[in-house]
Length: 124
Image (cartoon, one colour):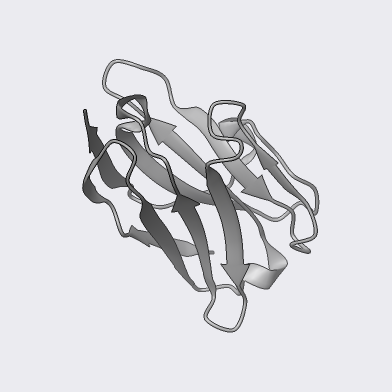
């Protein structure tokens, strides 16, 4: 079992930055591949970014490529999402997720563990 807790969300102006963190307990993140998803009001949950179990591979949605960076700190058992050049359309609840397969996954159905989400609001 893995328990995930996100933090770092908030209100920011367009063009600003936020750093989301996901703290894990119950299992070391070094044995899990990680992902970030988001869900805006009235929309389906969508993939944002993912990192392989080894940390050697990353993958981003086209909408965030070049602006967002996923990273992990195995010593602290955390995964982060650095978000730069934020846009109003980035407004959503952001979720951290984990699965135990080695490779990157971009479909939410392939993730086994989820956090409760953290709200990110970008004002224009």
